[in-house]
Image (cartoon, rainbow, N blue to C red; front, side):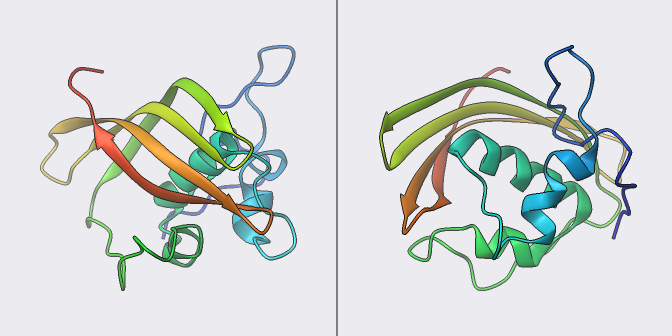
Length: 141
């Protein structure tokens, strides 16, 4: 599992008010490492933390934040794959408990081939916690 220093820039790429990368500890790590006590406050933060969890290969967090109706029984990671970056294109609240996030995530496989996942993801909030429901893959990126 890739280890990320708490002072290293967060894999999700979120910037602070001065347009500097946020440290992982001040960004996604707080949600990933303490999901029970500190859930992501909105759909975009959940999506970003899920990207960081993919980077860190944290299947426990990914499964815990996947809506129960869509959650797979287990999650495997591609050996040798390397996540290269995330771009959030939009975050659209639909109502108080539903939102969509469009993003592009870049990855390089063990074979050296780069791929892009461009998705519009759907999220739902239940009992104060946001969950990933599903998404539509989009062309381009």
